[in-house]
Image (cartoon, rainbow, N blue to C red; front, side):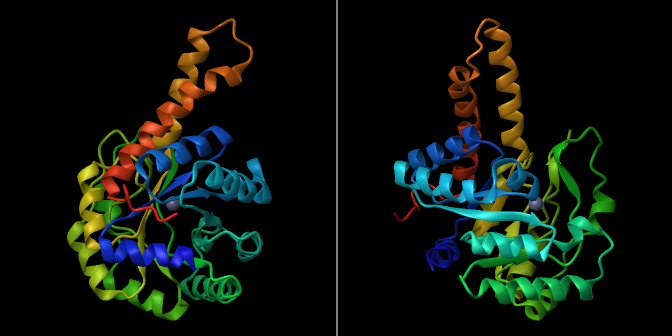
Length: 291
Ligand SMILES: [Zn+2]
């Protein structure tokens, strides 16, 4: 209920909520501290690899503990779940947001199969009221640093269209449509470009909420405009990972005699926190938390 209410507030007040991937406790602390400082609602999200690393129940408990400790509005999203069973387990564990992505495991999965399996998750999510997100085809890129340039013409062929988006939302009953309008997973040597006119056309056509994946390496003005158009959720991963790794490498190099690495971690999570804060400000969610 509270998660649904958050999406309604986002639409009405014209802000987007950041969904920040975590694969360790320090990154969760970075997100929680940014949320507290800017009084912003946040989602933390975990992909299947990140679930394996931390554990489904551990994630639920850690998020609940930090939520209470910091007095913040924070939810969990299961990010890019390749199977219906994984989605059901996360729903059972009380995740408020579920992203089912059949084409993640099989890039050639047909629309019929994707719709059928997405519907199964939508039905199951009714038990808890979790919000379900999906998309009709494979979404490009990967959450990493890419050397290659972006082939904008090739990517345009994978863009969502308003008609396809509408058909997909209506045939599955999903809450959130993951739109492809120039957003790509990962970080590239050139800035990303979002087709905001297309995004507006999709927004006008759909009743459901819209998410943008692959937010890293995107000029911030695109986020400000996307939030005003009515995007509810923007996923951020690579920019945080880059800050984490670069800072970790630096503090390890600067402190060759320190073997209690835990003592070096505050420097690391403070740099990740800066990334989260920068995105929150661009998404317009600062000061929007209800706790
Ligand atoms: Zn994604």
